[in-house]
Image 1: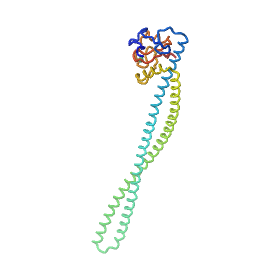
Image 2: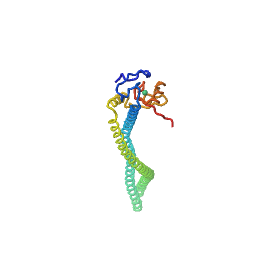
Image 3: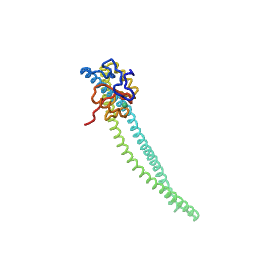
Image 4: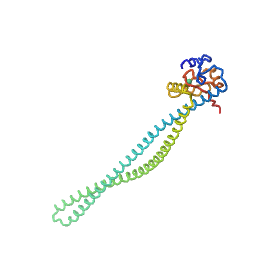
Length: 275
Ligand SMILES: [Zn+2]
């Protein structure tokens, strides 16, 4: 079929005629109205087939992307939740230390009280001095415990506030995630429906397109990275973004004949983008 193509310069009239009147490379022959209509219909089917297949490709890519996005959002919530869990554990361990410190302080105060009571029972000055020393030690120890307790209560206060904020943020984050997940799932569902429509319409069209044209379409498609039919506007081919010769562009606007881009060999059609 290669002898059907335009030459590299895309010169008009340099094409070899194809004897099949439905062939997209059938050119230069006197076009009867009826045959012209048939070619026009075939071109319209090819354009629609390309649109369906391109849309199906985009939908499939999106269908692949959405679960990845969902997973990313889920991981974000999970790592946020892990941070809050860590804060909660820290708070628990601080509370435990507070209870221990409380008990130590209580015991210290009890010991101090008992020692002070025994102070009145001592007989000798030596014993009295020793007891005063003991009281001093207890007082110093208790005072240290009290300082530690103040700092501990301060830490507890900060952590409780941080945890409360974190829990609130996590809750909001989780709510947003659930909403987003529901939205993405709905989108996935509707994409599946849209894909179904495209695939069904694509196979319908394929049945209506002559096998020879379809074979050529597939050939050009695999050579043209999945795209066989492209629009041309203001002399620029949508497939390769190169200019096509002005003469070819003029003919493309008037003609119902099917042709290919001299640069990328894709099937081209004129698309009026004014308004
Ligand atoms: Zn091109």
